[in-house]
Length: 534
Image 1 (cartoon, one colour):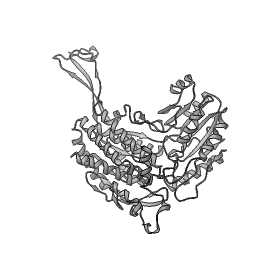
Image 2 (cartoon, one colour):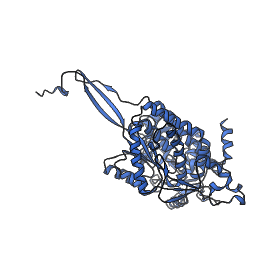
Image 3 (cartoon, rainbow, N blue to C red):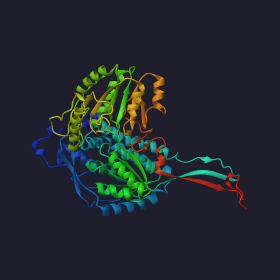
Image 4 (cartoon, one colour):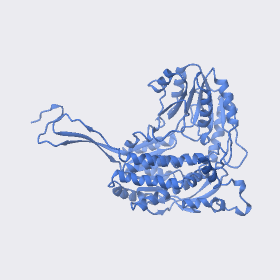
């Protein structure tokens, strides 16, 4: 049933070669075969600011389709005056939202999830068109937002703190959790729907208002998602500014980081920019939640099941054209299986179907921008200069759009500078190891600490990997890829990955402030620790 549904939706976005000369308009949205974009409320020119009403007085940006570099539509971004107006309205909206009981807030989040379900195919198509990931991944990303809405609904009846035993007679000791207030959310191009969803759904049920700045290159997705959310808020007669949108560039992001009215700033992006965000927020003693880079590794031992290793490495390294923060970038192979795995993996790479991201047969689409293609070529060249051998790929594909070959490099030392560097592209460095100790150490020696996985049948090794001397990452897997996390667990990493946690488990606590409350219901005033003061 799902296959039929997905196949039908692929007809929403025909390949560029299918258009006739008569349909050659300057913007894709003006062409008949892209009329489905209007189902999302999009048009040739779109407002990029929402705070209960739509507007925008800043720069006009045009977003492009990575599969052909043709313009899709335009978005007018926010000026700093728009920012000021929006944040004031968001703070006012919070006063209303915070008074609504948490289960009632959960009911509105449930309706947001249902509204997304109604638009999942067309919104997934937009993700393919504007971001460039294949259609099934675009659908999957919208599904993540839906899933976290479902999760948040249940959480809205469960959040809270414990009642603790007091050492003083006639006293109660409790934890009270309250919303922080306004949550600023800055998201990256590679997950333009899901990461906002992780933050938005949980922040909302906790009682916060949200201010979202998406990546400028995926502004249409930000506008489309906000239109879906805004309608639910308006239908429930609550202020639309509870979920405000402010499309913009560096000036808006900097303003959010500096602004004391932003009670928590969730930032997803590069380690370089994330460090500046963290310093700026810390300077005002604000809160930040950072989801930054990942130089992720799989370690396959001599007893690994190669029927698991090959497809796992393929999906983790090639999926989303290597543009996930959890993408596999380093593959450590025990020396006894190295050559066999490299041979089988190269064969698997050769069978990857490259094409338009909305084509149902495509497994691998374009990089997001022309700049990413340049970065890919520079990394391949550096790998060669540092002693690596390209055993598969390494070139730009001769076709429209930002397409490069998925690439495998062998022969580099584990501490080569390029291996230690996260390159946001589909380049996999395959390295040979002899012993468990060195493999674990190599996994941990990079600056980032996001995702990791081992492949083995040895139970002792598995628990050493999970233990204090094993992987130092926030995501530590066994016999599965580094990417493809579920929403029920906390998502995030250590070290230069930022230390933040989003989505499931107890990540909700980051969106709230905790008070320890002692209540004296007696007529006496005993002091703690038995102190006498009279």
